[in-house]
Length: 112
Image (tube, rainbow, N blue to C red; front, side):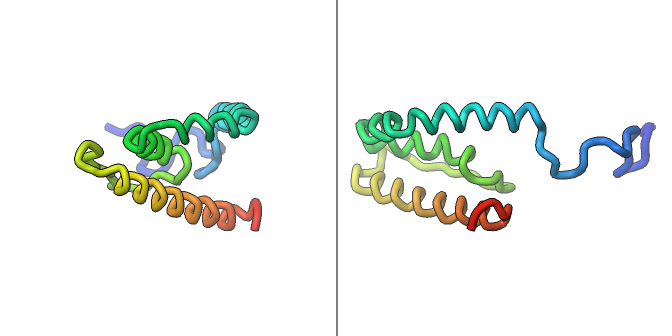
């Protein structure tokens, strides 16, 4: 039998819904600061990747740049795609990520 009613906990003054975890926030800030200092070098390294590896890189980091969506999956057979198709897909992903990032920034009220 449940100890508490659904939607209630033993700590009603606990962390508010939607509040960020302080440890995760500090880690995120540290990673952001590191990447900011290494951004130009990282850009050059990504440019040197093959189109297939560059596409995989963007697909792998996309979840960190965009808010998590429910019931989403991205399945692509990179082996069957031409370099031109991969390059176009990368550019489309960049545009989508940029639009989403701008939306999130506007929604949070941090920047306009």
